[in-house]
Image (cartoon, rainbow over all chains, first blue to last red; front, top):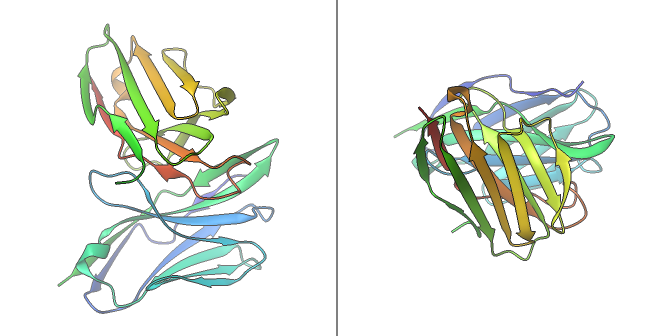
Length: 113
Length: 115
């Protein structure tokens, strides 16, 4: 069934440390994955995406890893800053009759100065 | 500035009121979406429009009525809502070709409170 979930609902890190946010998905046919950041009072903001024919993609201070064998997605944030404090969502693109994007519940990241 | 603008940002309405939420995108996209975000729940897809045509209604109650006059504008008309409809309503847009083509771009939402 459709199930995009997160291993931890909250994550607290020290400023300057690296952060890793995890996401499990259940549909092995999903072909596209996206990470979003949502700050308080704002809508989800696109961070980085990855297609199923890749296992790693890097952006500015962020890296997404995709492990299709265990259906696991992770977001790594290097040198975490207070401005990174937000809720992070993963989403998977599923084909099942119609194409749709299914979101996880989110992980709240708190960066301590 | 997200390229997707939603108004109003906050709305309080009684159960007998009629109100509308507005969304406008300046990204040249052809697909527009309404999502509902409730506390501690994943984003729930409500409606999808592609080139002004509704292509998805995710079993949404008829007290929510969408309207898409053109590819840049999307409305959500509300009437006789229930308190459990209180939530953040998010509009999004994307390029044509489906949700696998590229990421959705979201507005900052309308925080709706039904009293």
